[in-house]
Length: 151
Image (cartoon, rainbow, N blue to C red; front, side, top):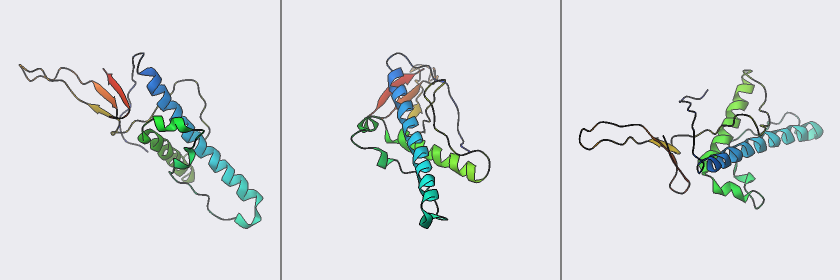
């Protein structure tokens, strides 16, 4: 489905609340998309004129940002976009009978956030004398929403 690498990060005390906020906002968008799909399907079953019409399965998330959810503006838009993309991928798997319909995600257990290349970079420090790469620390965040360096 999705190519890439999986990492388990161990953020420090200052970085944990930022990443927790990102996880929560991504879960909120995903759950809003699932609930929206349920509402469309429920409406379609009850209204005779809509039988047979396609239910929209899109990646739009901007309609969920309003005054009540203004905190969504405090995270990078890539995090919110990734939640909508994950929903669409899950729905495509459902249409190909590779899985069930997307479900509501609960808070609890091991949480994760999908970070794409716009949100992180490996920038190795190089020793000046020898030119040797010392390590590969992970820089997470954007200029507007920095998280910091996670070794």
